[in-house]
Length: 354
Ligand SMILES: [Ca+2]
Ligand SMILES: [Ca+2]
Image (cartoon, rainbow, N blue to C red):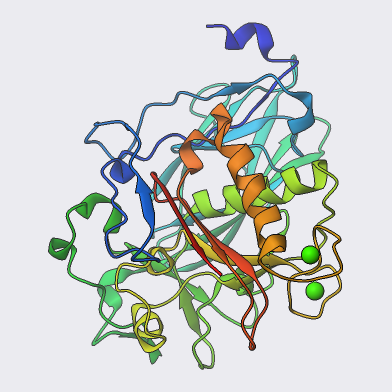
């Protein structure tokens, strides 16, 4: 495979296509009027696609870690990431594109985990919900990658639409949508506490940024897909590389419980409910409104367009293949500034609301 020749010089970034997105349809998605361009996508019926990392010959995409880590069907190039698993779930972790002649070890809370193969581990989560921490270190002891593991509370623990008094609400009946595969109910929920809410999910985003905006004490519960984190990190990086400085990318809305989603009058099958959508804007000056990204002295939908144009650029790249999805551009309203919606539903959907 060509990959072997490129190991030292390239950075891989790939998100393997989740086949359960394959037949996704924008029906009932975040904008009813969305213009949907259904792309020809994989017809595979299995949930886990085989590992086919996309090689990116572009140094500008240099990753934070000195290798990429394949976690089941996603490939992570960052030095910090997260795992969302069920109790006792076994996750395959495989280092790809390692630095030549280097060896790595996986540590769970400081204890070395035995390898399955030279660069692969089959790591089993603990049997109770909560956090665990994994580190991948090179032989010199340097930590190359940290993974915050969130062992989720299994979805069957939801009673009457609630988990420990937190209102989640009923998930819509999958039979109502044509493309059931993309609208499967979460298999579990991450418990968010005052103690764990500041944990990093990826280099620039914390757990608490994604919780549903409903009024509630702790614990809260959230459901997220790692593809969203990859997409947000990629957008952030792309903007910075294009001289659009981003120090603070605000998640105005990340996960929404079905209960909250309904309360704000949104469509039932919002991607926010399925954990792979975020409404975002750049707010380096910290006034909780979009900044003037195009430097025209105004803050309006054109600043949201600057972000949307970056997504459009990313869409042309092979490494972005597994991250395609919805892109909504929103103009300002009296109570909030302009923003964009992104999700990873697996097919392109575009809309614009001035
Ligand atoms: Ca601002
Ligand atoms: Ca502007």
